[in-house]
Length: 330
Image (cartoon, rainbow, N blue to C red; front, side):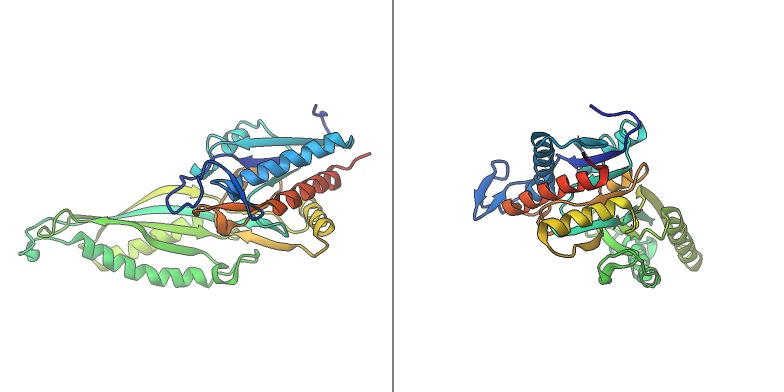
């Protein structure tokens, strides 16, 4: 039972997974233990962490550890589609509270992630004028207009690259990044001048920036392009906005996880940051939040996904010691 007014630590993880795709040696939904690894969709991302959390909680109960605070375990169903109905719902409805949260995303046994990038997902649409393919002078080619926009966006990418983050992201992406054309569509038939073209932008935003400022910068940039070309009819639609997250390394929960990792593995833990986004986006609204879990992000969403059995045991020990360190015990 929870003690009202006592310090609370929240464990969180998601049990939904992405589709398996092809290329599997094993059945993705019939876990197989082979060569010290558990193969199956969700092993690394992140059912392995859920298992480790449950083992940690069971061990604390079995050993009769009398915690001075509350440990809350939450698991949600839709992180892979944004978390709006899972962790987002819990946070927005204030159905969960605490002084800190640990989310079991796969960081590897020796690393804790304290930050993650946000995202601005945008759809650009150029509008042209259809005409017969043999008489292009009678139309306006929307694909060609989009091509000019795509080329111009390279200069904005360079501007973004100059704004380095202090968070511990890999050096190659320690800035706002932009993926141009994750989806690009235009034209209907080879002999018709295309009157419409769509191109998506996936902009990943560092914690020092705000989604609003990045969106404004992009809008202003596109407006300048339209001024230079009267025939450029360009529309911008925002598909999603995700705020970045950052927990300072001096927070108590970071120190607790680092201490636990050090004791279990007898080494100095690594501090990192995630280039994607997770349910940290939600929990950081209520409490300092970190990511720690068995497995590797390199195994997430791939065929033959696996998590090492030893990593599961290590994570369980780290979760248990983190709980004792953060909440205290008698």
